[in-house]
Length: 388
Length: 228
Image (cartoon, rainbow over all chains, first blue to last red; front, side):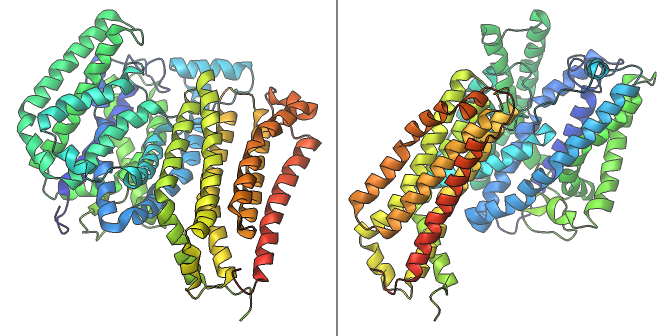
């Protein structure tokens, strides 16, 4: 990797993945599958919402981890392992500890308010309302919420140090030398046990304790990102496979939906579950690789809007969920079509987050933690610090 | 020159030297700690027992490893003779060893102890285990401080090995003794953190004696005009 080369494709991929995250969380409110567990689940919903979001769910976070692995390896290359760990502590550890209670309190307060005031509550809000009627709410075990990505990013940074201290030299080169086709076949098999241990679709690992499956699943993508950074030719060799990766993934996803629809609930550890996990693993790997390869082919140019969004993406990632839920709670009683509510909630969330980014982050001390320099032209670029 | 004066840059270099020498083993212990926390995170009875056991093994191994490699092996391999050729006072050397050991043992110790307490508080496990757990961690802390002090003061490898192994192995009788104290044992299965007088007294003794032993060793070293 040339030291003076700007990584526009990674900036752009991160911005797109962040936008996909806001869309995903907003759309959960209108997904029939998420009705039982999502607090803003709306009475206006459609099975059409499920089709894109669960497809997105299979490669959105893996893509983030590839980007994170890429920049972690770049930081190790530029600053050494100690420099990387110090930088990650400032840009990931401190924001995680700072924002976790704030986000938790904001979501809890708004959810309790909604449980008392919304006329058409979701099943979860209705349950909370029933509990409130019986007395004080039982305390819930605290988790990482949607900030679980930061938690695992910190963990993977520590494991990067462990791997460098213990790992055999030349491991990256050996991995990069694996023919792309072998990687595309072998990597799904590597992440399969992790996904097979979880229900379909897999949940977010929000526990405060690390989970084996999440380390195995997301760690594989983090490692892939690090290998790509060390050996950029790998992704160029994968570009020739893009032409079939996307249609093949769509076919697999159609099979996934068909099986899920046909059999209803699939018991964990059954053969059907294993096959669904295999489909999930394959789609995850193929679509993530396709996104990175397509990014290198199509997004390797500077775009002001995307660059701004990439810079703001860390803040938007931190702040979007409480803002989004606050907006969607207020939309629940409106007799609007789900598509109007979805569009409004996405636009309003992004607008408020960007406004807050300008007012609360870029002009304050928070810029050092979760913002970005306006004049940053380093190769690590806007995403060098801590891609969420 | 005051005997309490410390050559800070050199102490940093000595600590960095120990860190670089022991990095591989420390990485292994950190990996073991993460595996143990993952096992605890599975929220199964068997994984809780295995995870707890791995945590204790990792802590005891880290403690013994830090002491034996940074002090005992260094003496055995005559590395100390080289260190003595540097512009280092016995106090500089002692402070460097103390800091190096406290970092190599203290950081994993605090992370693992904090993680274990978090597991108890955040899972359906009875919160009464917090007191019991803290007393066990307190014991490991005390055993570590005693072993480190003995390794600093006593040069005999045999005595050091005896001190390390006996103090760490005594954790089993200590756990059994705790189980025989009704005001501690009876509260383990309760879903509340209950600090009784015996529990507070034991923990206080562990902390005060541990810090006291290290402080005494440090003061004894200040008075030494030479390494031997």
